[in-house]
Length: 464
Ligand code: PFF
Image (cartoon, rainbow, N blue to C red; front, side, top):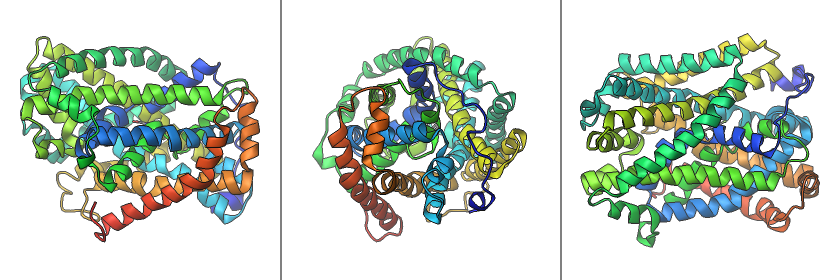
C-alpha cells in the first residue's frame, strides 16, 4: 500500500499529548463509545434478535471478546505510541501488516458517513421539538415520510456533517471533551427519567420482561452474529480508535480496570436506552412483531409516542434529542478524527487537506445513505438499502477481519508476553490466563465462524 512505499510521516514525530489519568482516559473513551450505537442501534437490535437472549449473549461476548480485544488494542497503542496503521507497521512492514492496519483504519471512515446521515435525522427531530411539533412527530407515518423526502433528509445530513467538520477544523478537541463530561451525566439522568416513565406505562412490563429475561425460544445464530457486531460497534473496537486512545494513555493507568469501567458505563447506557424504547413498543403497540422488527426507525417512531403521551412531553423530547445529538456529535467527531489522523500520518496530508478529504468521503457515502430511502431507493446492494449495506459491510464483514488481524498480530507477532508486560507496567494482570486463552483459541475461531455466517446469510446460503 501507498503508505508502505512512501513511508509516511512518522506519526510520533510531534510530542504526543496524553490523558491526565485513569478518569480522563475513561471519560474520553466513554465519550467516544457512548453514541448512537447505545441509544439507537442497541434497542432495535435487541428488539429484533430476541430481547433477553440477545442481551445475555451480548454480555457474555463483552466480558470475553470485548475485554480481550480492548486490552489488546489499548496495550498495542500504548506500546507503539501510534494509531493503527503505524502500530501494525511498528512490528513489520509486509503486506499483511499494511492490510491489518488499514483495515482497522478504514472502518471508521465507512461508519462515519452513515453515522452522519442518522445524526441528520436526530438534528431534524431536535429542531421539530424546538418548534413544538410533539404531536406531529408521534404520527406513525412521520418518520418514513421524512426520510423518503430526500431533499430534506439530505439537508439535515449536510448540516450535521458540517458541524462535525467545523469542530475538527477549529481543533476544539478539548472543548468537545469538556462538553461530553457535562453531557454524559445529564444523559444518564434523563435516560433514567424517561426509562422510568416508559416502564410504568400500562402494558410496558411485558417489554421489560422481553428485554431482561432470556428466552431460549428467541435464540438463533443470528442473535450471536448481531450481538457481536453490536459489541464491536458500541465499544468502538476494531476501529482503530482504541489504538489511538491507548497511545495517549500514561504508563501508570491500569488498562484492565479502565477497560471494565468503560464496558460497564457503555453497557449501562445501552440497557437504559433499551428500557426507554422496548417497553414503549409493548405499551403502544402490544409488542407486535412488525414493530419489534422496525430496525433503524425504532427510536424515531416509538420515543416520540412516549413524549406525546406525557406531561412536559415537548420539553422532555427536546432534552432527549439534544442529548442524543450531543452523544452522536462527540462520537462522530472521534470517528472522523480517526480518519483524519490516518490521512495526516500515512498520506502526509496537512490537517486541513485531511479534513477536506474526510469531508468528501462523508458527503459521498453519507448522501447515498441518506437518499437511500427516497430518490435512491431503487439502489439496493445485496437486497439492502445503502445505509443498511454500509452498516453490514463495516460491522459484519470488515470488523471481524480487523479484529482477526489484531488477534494474529498479538498471538503470532508481538506475543502474549509482551502484551502482558505492557499491562503489568501499571498493575498486576489479573485476567492474564483467560486473556491468553481468548486471544489464542477462542477469539480467532469464533470470529471466523461469525464472519462466514454473515457472508453465508447475505448470500442466502443459510437463513438465520
Ligand atoms: N461507539 C460509538 C457508538 O456506540 O455510537 C460509535 C463509535 C464512535 C465508534 C467513535 C467508533 C468511534 F471511534
